[in-house]
Image 1: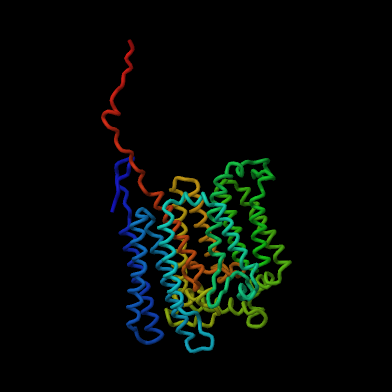
Image 2 (image 1 turned 180 degrees about the horizontal axis):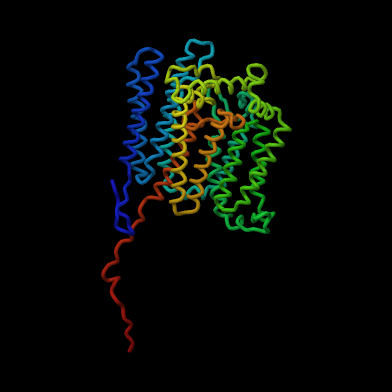
Length: 466
């Protein structure tokens, strides 16, 4: 399926068939992985594996058809990557559930994650159908900023019984339903950041003086980054959510640097982050606990801090996996607390080994790279900053959670996008992908060729005077 380019006459391929082929490949891999888990854990491959594969394929084919119809020139790689990561996550959640079946505290129900996947795909389709032009979002930047701040603040003002889980007040719990509104606040605030920086880019790029080779911004222009810094500290103080605080501040500083191309903003942002981390360590006990566990996990293993046990078990599991892993269904990921959510990366490392873990990280790297490629190709400044911000948020979130699990940095409360158990993160990331595909479609769509002028309009005119 191709379309002619208005300026050169050449055809621009939509590449939807490439997307379909990659999707089918992802379905085969996911169904095969499910069959391997069944064979190794239950000593048989049940007919449910075929039903699961067929249902999984049907859902993602519906998403493909919608993209083919409403965003035919969108990037053909993002949807298959998300399908493969999401499918692998479902397989690992199912595998951990089988290992804990019959215990007093079984792991998360994979059927619930399938429901969230369906909700996420519906949200993905809704975003594509409603937002036909990404530039429209810039008109509602301040409205979305207010909505994002409201979503971010809501858990902090609710009573702890409605918002606190494992010490972090980042949830809204009503009945049996739990929602993490910060995941959706991230999307709203990214739209605002992009629109704001497009409007203020020229002012923020001005320099007042040079210091150590850096062109420093004017003092009165430091307001936005200080506001972002204070907001991230407020989230950390009230909600005790180190991961979300780091994510929001990191996104804003990265976008500020991309918009202005001023290294000084990056240095200032890193300096404020270091100052905030220093203050947080000396003021908040839970931050001190995280740092102590990170630096000396063996000293507190199974004695003082439960999270130290989790971290050490995750490291033991990944060490057991070695290069090639124990094989799907042949490890002991159930020994790691929250092996299907916070520590699903440890499950990947144990059963798929270093090579499998690297393959998963390569998929995330490709997703982020394609996002930056879209940012480079789109014509309008708002679209560039929006897609860059969406890509930075995905990459930063993966770095923070993988770095925590592998003891590169202190642990945080973030989830692994598309892979971990959890509904809010999964649905929000489907929305993130829909925005990337919408901007990608606009960047590759051929310009509309103006209709040819009529012969009468092209005729020469002559002024006759008496």
